[in-house]
Every structure is written in structure tokens, then in C-alpha cells.
Amino acid sequence: MSYTLLLRNCGQLLTLAPTSATGPLAGPDQADWPIITDGYVACVHDRIVALGPMAELDEAQVTAATRVVHAAGRVVLPGLVECHTHLVFGGNRAAEFQRKLRGESYLDILAGGGGILSTVRATRAAPDAELLAAALRHLAGFRRYGITTLEAKSGYGLDAETELRLLRVAREAGRRQPIRVVSTFLGAHVPGPEYPGRPADYLTMLARDVLPQLDPAEVPFVDIFCEEGAFSVAQARDYLTRARELGFGLKIHAEQLHELGGCEMAAALGAISIDHADYLSAAGAARIARATGGRTVAVLLPLVPLFLRQERYAPGRKFIDAGLPVALSTDFNPGSCPSKNLWLALSMACLKMGLTPREALAAVTINAAWAIGQQQQCGSLEPGKRADLLVLDVATAEEIPYWLGENPVRHVIIGGELMAD
Ligand code: NIG
Ligand code: FE
Image (cartoon, rainbow, N blue to C red; front, side, top):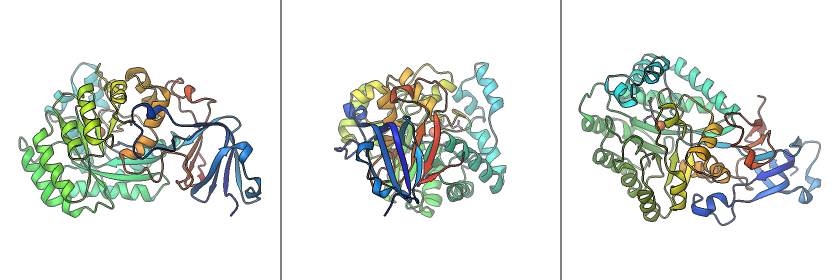
């Protein structure tokens, strides 16, 4: 069948697809993926069917029915995978931002009933239609940054009914626009306001009343925030163990503000990702890499310390050197990162975490896909994968983190369709 879409004269085709990869890219492999110069990518409907140097393009498959995009020497790469967001919430926290600027800390604001809990109040009060409209607006913003697959957590309901409502809104948002949305249940964000000082009781309620109502085919992951003021390592272990028994993949927010041991605990349970990890040591990372055989991905979120005015960033360089695969995400949420700019996160990972541009590019594509179990579908340019592609207004991979804070996206293609804006 003739090609339905052809990207031609791609100055650099960043494949993100080493032929030997059977897991997330780890150690030296995170930077070792092929770039094809002066390449093409051919698609039939929503799938990539061929790619390679222009000299090898089968012109016989290019017919009047083929939509041709001339990349004109620009960089082409897979659509970005945003593997950690809190997409659905009501209100915003601009007022708390002012308090933070005056010196109050994230945990102090939370302990005073603000922070996550203030977003919970706004979210509970918002009708579905309002939450959906906001989620769709945010997804449109992500799409313009070239995000083509996105993980969305619940976690601002903190009671059974509202948490289920947030998951339904995320699913509906996924249906109404082209970005593929993958849901995670984060009911265990902090103890619900009805459970002051009783985190274990709150988790018992979630495990009894909510987890059994969820279908792992629709909500594949269960996440928990392991931190002072949220849940302890022991509480998180019990809860995640129950989630695993019910067939969910596991994720954790851990070592964000203190070194409690949540990352190692979750990795030992087989978590697909351990997220934040700003306080995870290089030795801890090496133990996790060894114990999991490089299957658990560290999802690093460099815009969070920036926005919370913290000096400490996860030592991503050391993690990669220790063999721990690294992914990057914004952590888009109203409290610790109201930004959707994954390109800025990529630059910040180079500047503050010591990643090379090539490592950082793998961290927002193929390793991010592994972090949400979507590696068969997206994250690299390979025949058979979904035709999610970006044309960037740069000529080389090294330029991408250099244009700090810019959106380099010129064209977004999702499932073989060229997006209009
Ligand atoms: O990933 N750390 C916990 N949860 C979010 C922030 C949520 C909020 O402040 O609203 C995070 O940073
Ligand atoms: Fe988060």
C-alpha cells in the first residue's frame, strides 16, 4: 500500500531506537542511539512503516495519495512522552506562590491546610464540565509542545467519589483529543482531610473502597506520595503490595524532600518507576539498578526544585553512571510545577542534573515510554510503532537543550495526522 504520510529531507532523524534494546536505555546506552542524516519517515495511516536515509526511499510508494511534509533539513524525532502529570484539578495556587516567594516552605504550607489540600477543596467544588474543560485546555497546551502521549494522575479528590470522578474526567479528556492519555490512581497523595493524623486508616479505605473498583486495563498504575506529611515507607509498602496483588503497576513519589527510603522500597516491589528522587543517593541508585536489572525507571522532575526554590536536584549524572535508567517529566500540577514545558525540563536536566543532550532526549521519549508501559507503541521511530512524530525548528540534536525555554516544535503528527496548530 502506498504511503499515506511521508516526512522527507529530515536533516537529522533521531531514532531513539538502538537495535539491541530490550529494556529502558541504561548506562552508556542512554546516549547511544542512532541518528540518520538526511532521512525519511514513511507512515501508513497511524503506523510508521519505514524509515532510513533519503537515498533508500522507495519512491514507488509515494503517490498522489501521500501527504508529503518537507522537513527541509530540520530535526525529526518521536513525539514526546510526558510520563508524570497531575492533569485534572480545579483552581490554581497563584496566591500560595506569593507566600513561597516570601519564604514559606512547601511542607509548611501543606501542614497549615494549604498546598495539595487547597487544590482538593477547589477540585471537589468544581463540576465535571469545568474540570474537563481545564484538562482539555492543558492537553492542547501539551500538544503544542509536542507531547503525544501523557500520563495523568488523580489525587486532588482524596475521597472515593471524587477520586473516581477525576479518573473518569481524565478518560473523557483522552477520548476528546488526540494525545493518548494513560491514567494513574494517586488517591494516596496525602491523607484526605477527613482523616487528620490517620494516614493508615485513609489507605485502608482506599484499598477497600476504591482499588477494587478500578480496572487495571483502564487505570494501569497506582501511585503514592511517600514523604513527611504524606505517607511513611511502611504505609506505602503495605498499600503498594495490595495494589500489586490486584494487578496494578506501581509508581511512587519518593525522596522528593527527604531521604526516607521510599524509592528502594518501591523498586524492590517491582515499581515501573520511582519519581522525584532528588534525595536518592548514588549508592541507593546503584542498589536499585542492580536489584531491578535496570527495569525500574527513575523519573526526574527538574522543574520542581526550580519552582519550589530548592537547591537540591536529583543527581541524574550519577544515576545514569550507576546504570539506573532516567526519564524526565514536568510533573505538571498546580503546586510544584505549573509548567507544561518539557523542553525546559530537558534543558534543566542538562544544566542541573548533568545529563548530556542525547541522554536527556532519551529521557523524554523512549525511557518515558517505558516508565508508563507504552514502549511498544511510542517513544522511538521504528516500523510498527504509532506515527507520533515531531519536526523541530533546529538542525541538530545538540541545539535542542540550548534554546532555553523555547518551544522548538514546528509540526506535530499524532497517529499519522498532521496537527493544525
Ligand atoms: O508531584 N509531591 C507531591 N505531589 C505533587 C505536587 C502536588 C501539589 O503540590 O499540588 C508533586 O510535586
Ligand atoms: Fe507528581
